Image (cartoon, rainbow, N blue to C red; front, side, top):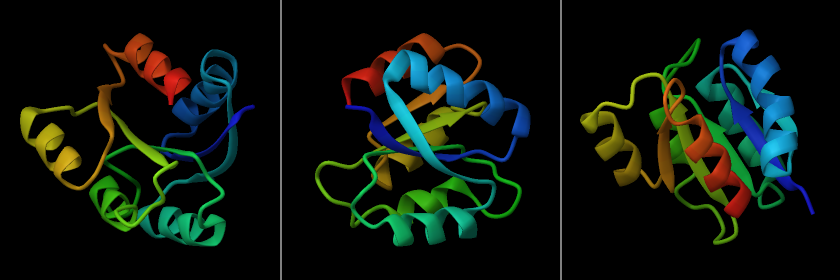
Length: 121
């Protein structure tokens, strides 16, 4: 059964490439996308506990993925949040994990690991 997925990514090019790849490689059904932190939080609240996976970029058109992670802290046990970013510095990894991210991956060098992780979620 496909993972009900929310994609928080401000780049249309990345969204357009990531959505079909998630569907094919991770059996994900992307039911909503957001370009800003406030859009993402509204979607998370609307979908409540029906989503299973949230893929979050850290740098958004407005706001930060860290704000989105903070909003996910009260999620249900079946819900996973993964950060996919171009800036996976040690500090960003530490902050993301401290805010409850289940994993963090580099968009440019760790896509295989990202898709593998999502497929196992």
